[in-house]
Length: 176
Image (cartoon, rainbow, N blue to C red; front, side):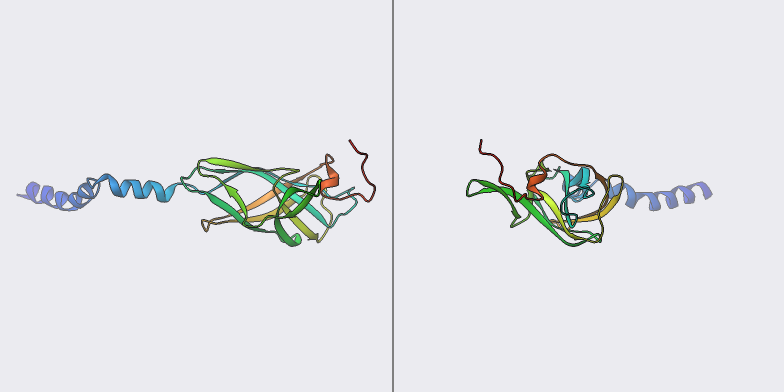
């Protein structure tokens, strides 16, 4: 009798757990969709300002990967080291490469990636509160159209190539 009572009690406790795992595949699909990560951020870095003509601004670069089934956009960024942070792009205007704010954010296609790189899309940090040297670290928060955000600590690295794109020279370059 005692054994039957123990078995019955065990069955009453275990039955709801067993039944809950026997549902249709629909809840599993929803659960899988809910756990699909948002945009993944890799290889982020900030250009050093030490030695630059203008130490009040710099840019952050990184790789953004979207493993999801819908496009997501990087919509904004913030950093306590800068008075203003904007999403920028490089584009041709009147035969010259110019930097401008990117309207609508930076798109990261579904199941694909976007690279923020010198001479392309980037996160612009302006009104810097101090010069940045290689080895420093910059706190950076990225906000995305899906409501997610990433708090990063980004290393500062030396960068000298194509400096004219970020610190325009008053001396005209020779014609090609």
